[in-house]
Length: 101
Image (cartoon, rainbow, N blue to C red):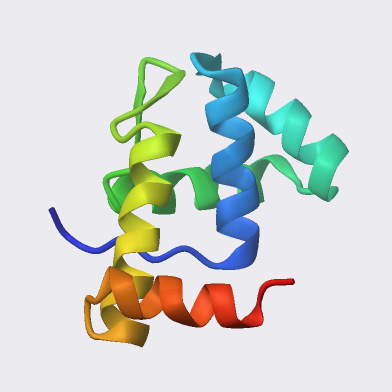
């Protein structure tokens, strides 16, 4: 599966979608206006970007996930361990336990 990277705002919007799915795009416009003070066009632009990344689909105005939230964050965690600790979960745990109090 291709690596999906999200910016902070994209991640917050994705979390909003996961919390409300299935959700209509018009409901997302209302939710994003409340949460981010976005205009309709901004919401549709960011939604299209997330759909293009393969995270969600928008079929006939209903938005659903193609990748569940738990799977997405699991992939992000694995990538972090690979990038920061050469893929060694033991090295990650050793570092984490040294600094955790």
